Image (cartoon, rainbow, N blue to C red):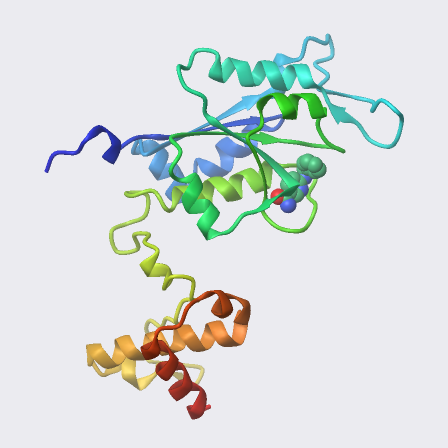
Length: 254
Ligand code: 4FD
């Protein structure tokens, strides 16, 4: 089978950060580490500090107008950015990790996975000089409504979530598809050996070998769990008539 150019590419992530070693350590391991070794993705953390022109390699300064904390300087961030894009004939998508951004969810993750090259800017302290944000940032993204000491953990969360949707990153058995996420439903419960653990048995249907019944039970469990744990997801999800009756059948049994 021949693959055309666009069926297969290496997705590139560049990160602008004052803590580049965090990325090498964490994203070098496990599934994301293997994806890098296999050439499916590349992760490159660029140290903003190396672009400081100050003799003490300073990357922040006091805010104009006064106030607490420090503000990251525009110049080292801009020069770090230019060190990546200066030689390119296209413009990568630049994302600023910030609690003020659009909330990351699976549909945004899938949208981001369509880009060949993302640059993630990790802010620190009380923020970043607004002018460099205006100059380089395309999109501001938040991983949730809470504040962290830096954008590094959010950037790693985003990279992990995007990478696992890329074909070939997960094993064939666990490969990603919108379908394998039951299209916005929660996963059904899983069991492995032994058949009995602390007097708790594996549900009989899973031991029956009756594939149609197993499929039905799992779908029912997904629906029921979503109703119980995340009713907000079920509201967005248009239930097919089959799902409606599966769910009401399951609710009646409880
Ligand atoms: N919820 C998130 C992102 C970054 C962050 C920072 C302004 C603070 C949480 C810009 C203020 C960056 C998030 C760094 N905390 N902290 O995604």
